[in-house]
Image 1 (cartoon, rainbow, N blue to C red):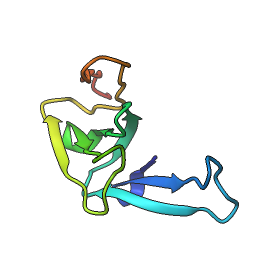
Image 2: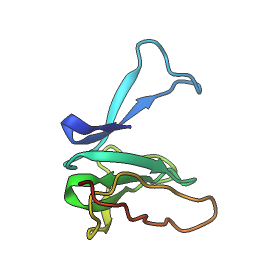
Image 3: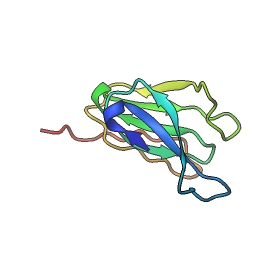
Length: 102
């Protein structure tokens, strides 16, 4: 999930496939500027629409898990306020372009 005001991407940790009442929230990556949308591919990589930076970034999973100190790659940085990302099963990630907010 995105934490817009804290410029971070976070995970609510499930235990045995269930989110407990007193859940653990883990920060997957920070340093974004108004992250607006996320998508997760079949390998566990997390894609982030980093709106105010005009970028789409990837938080890289290792063996299907985001490590404590993840690698964050910028996949594209010429977007005009990207608001969302999507992944398609069996296809390399596609970077959508969004309209500028006016």
